[in-house]
Length: 88
Image 1 (cartoon, helix red, strand yellow):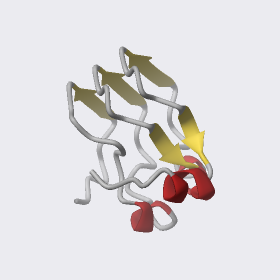
Image 2: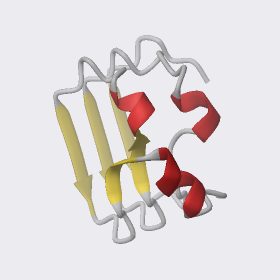
Image 3: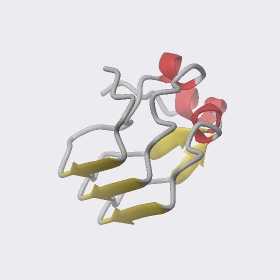
């Protein structure tokens, strides 16, 4: 899904372990305009971003994470993502 003008992303009460598929992290440039990311109640979520995606979040100025009890890392390494088994 391409959303090149997306500035705010809100995720709430989703039953997912990851937000973006691993294979798209390295080339995912459609997040460059994101300014706000809000994540609430995504209890199965283990991490938000792979390190390869973070470099594209150049406009991000607000990241809010609440009640995500299984979140281990905000930014994870590729080895963590593969090791933990990121199947949804």
